[in-house]
Structures are given as structure tokens and as C-alpha cells.
Image 1 (cartoon, rainbow, N blue to C red):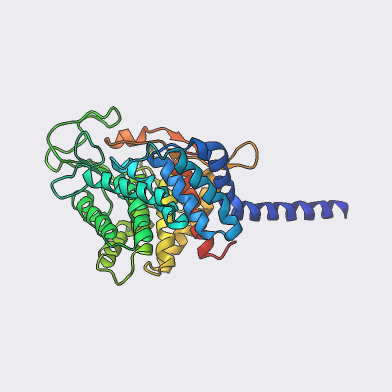
Image 2: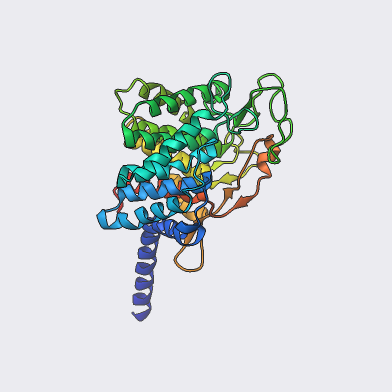
Length: 383
């Protein structure tokens, strides 16, 4: 009898622990980010950190009045610490501008509005491709799919701050310009990059000679690169009024990129791959940040009722469980952090992507996990 009681209580404990783990991993990842990865006073004005910052804005939006305080305090401290270096001279710098625009909207303080306007003016001066696409780099003109998310965070927050459609127009124009050069008509996915000239620029990160001699495009669809685009489009569709002339073209692009993802997901782990269209290649690997990004975008699409629930809901059920089981690692203390995250990546051939190092944490890993977890819990009414 005692043995049965013992087994019963062990079972109850495991059930409760599993339930708490399922419901609280967002809070644990958030705590790790704020307390260990990037304390507010040590915030760095860069793109990965901006992705994490954006996830804190999402948390602020979901929390009660008292729960909002710690996120507002973090964002304010981070922006004050970087106020003098804040700029928008290239897309990766523009990204953190979301914090200034957010604070201008929430606090009404003029200094944040003024800085946000300065960042926007910097953005307007960045080099452009002949079709108007903003260059990923200032030293040479290249269009990268990553850019769409980096500028979207700031431009959409500027629209929320001002209600001025110029920011929507800017974003929509960049999606169109980048899609023209990067989108593939068959797969719907975007190539990682496009080069505007016949000169190879050595950025000390990309593989030499990556642009095709004719198309000037790179050769591969990178998982996280496409994840960035899907998240940006999801956020835009959620922010821009449906009656806007910009809404429908963005919805069309959104659905194109997502259309082949159901067939490319690993049905056992719920993950997508570093190079999504080669799931069977033994050198390929399952990558957690693109999985969280695709899943966030799909969840938002389901919330907005623009995706077929029968097709897309099973994808996020698998990915949520899969990320929890395979790509969250327990750290000392109360922390869970993302693992199986491809580190910072430039442009190359297939083997270049296959050989990228996997890491843990990172701003974009933390941010994408938090944002997906929040929206998944919201969709399923998990508090």
C-alpha cells in the first residue's frame, strides 16, 4: 500500500512539474535574458539585442499593470545607457530604435521621440539598391533578408507612436524591393542575399564569391533568414489596418513564404532545418531559432485567422513541444535557455551553412522563443 501511495505521489509530482515547465518556460527564458545574458545597464546597441528587447515589449503588452513595471524599467535603463550611441546608420543599428519609439509612445518623454526621429533620419540616408532596397551594409550595396525584420521593429513602432502611414509605406516598399531580388517563385522562400554590383566585397564573414555571376543572388534559402521575414510580415499584418492598401500585398507575401513549410517540418521533433529544403541531407541540422520564428509567424497568422487552422495548427503544436523537449537547456538556478541555435551567420554555399556553429542563448534565440511562447500561450488561453 505504501509503495502504491509513493508511486501515486511521484506521478502527481511529475505531472505538475511537466505542466509548470510547459507553462513557465517563457518566464524562465525571459528571466535569464534580463538577469544573465543582458542586464539593462549593459545593453548593446545591436540587432540581436534588439530582438530580445522586442520580446520584452511583447511581454510588457501582455502583463497586468503591476507586471509591466519591470519591463518598462528595463527598456528605459537600456535606452538611457545607449542614448548617446543610438543611431540608424544601417539596418542592424535601426533595430534597437524600437526601444526609443516605444518609450516615446508609453512615457511621452520628448527625448525619446527626438532620438527616434534622429534614427529615422539616419535610416533615410542609408545606401539603396537601384530598386530602392535599403542596403544591409554601408560599405557596399547588398540586400539581405535579415534586413526586413531589423527595420520592421522600428518602423512599425514608429507607426504605433505617430499613426503616420509614411512608416508603413517605407516598410511595404522594402518588402517589395527585397522580394523582387530574393523571393523564389517555386518555393516561396527567400534567398539570403543579393549583390548590387560585380565587385566582391570582403566582409570577413561571408564566403568569397557568394553572388551568382548572372543573378547576383546567393544560392541558399537560410532558415533563420526566412524566419526573420515571416516574423516581420506577421507583425506588420497585425499592426497595419486591414483596410490599408498595403495590407493585402503583405498578406500575399506572407502566405507565399509559409506555403511549403508544412512539408518541410520534422514531424517528430517539430523543428525546421538550417537549410529548410534539404531535410534529408545528413550534414543539415535542426535549428531552433528559425523554428521559433516560423512558429511565431504561423501562430500570429492563426490568431488573425488568415491561415488554414487544419493545416497550420498541428505545426505549432509539434514545434512548441519539440522546442521544449529538444531545444531548451536547464542552467544553474531557475533558468532555461534556448539551445541548438545557429550562431551569427553571413552568406555562403550549402556547406557554409551546414558548418555554422550551434550555440545557446543569444538575443535572437531568447527573443524568438519568448515571442513564440507568448503567442502560443495566448492562442491556447494558457496563463
